[in-house]
Image 1: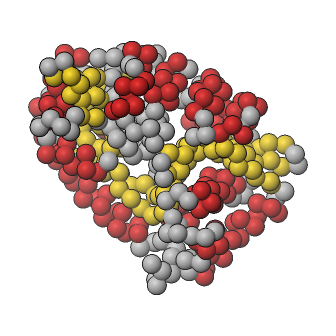
Image 2: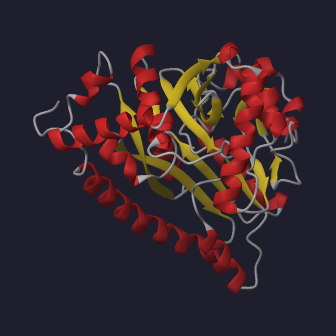
Length: 374
């Protein structure tokens, strides 16, 4: 087990995980660690697991030992309460996820040339859970095919719904709006018109165009918005934004909003492969529809201009539906050490999946597109 990314060769890591996923890059996870975001003090203790067979790598599982359930976006507070009512400890638990990042991606690597390699990796991690004295193992926001494979290995599946935008070959934003029915199209245009009427000016910057001053301002926005919403300054430190993010090259994309020459808000995205990921937002002053413009409409425009096929703006948010973001399922899998609880969790997960699938189907009927749109 590796207690730090510094123990893992970056070149070897790139062999395991696709560099096109910005959140599984060695330097992203290393940056979270060195800037104080993922430490034993934060409740995200790195515990990356490497499994070998006959001296050769068999599998690799990025993981963290968690002392709480914050920053995961797949909620299990009720499970923790059930453990407590039984006089048992739910924490610590083992979590395979990207901290503070509800974006779907690869979560496990196994040597595809070895028969039964995935099952050997899964059972190896489960055996390790007992020696680590954790209550459970949770694999969050993994790709459907890998999630389905874990179901076959006895790890029940949970579903959540997110809202993503898909590029259908649009020429520009107006071409995208042409798919909307008349009333929804007028509503969206009215929102965008309000931006200029309030004297707001927005600018999109990418990678090296983002200045140190921009990064310091963004952290200020991030802290201020988190404090208003939750009473604390957020999970990510100043150093994460001012040191780690600039080191990611052309991956970060920032939308900056100003009014009367003063910066007032910013939205941060990460580009990876054919996808734009909207991650963080903050403002120092309130303006009508600015959040939608900075976080959604400018992201859509960026995707169209860059030829990206998908825009993942983050978790939750039914208000995204009327703006053309389609409901999609996300997947997680869970394994409970204590057999007294494992059957109950499996039944809960199965029932929950039925409800989530029904919700996704219902949400799809609320999309703003014309009935004859492709």
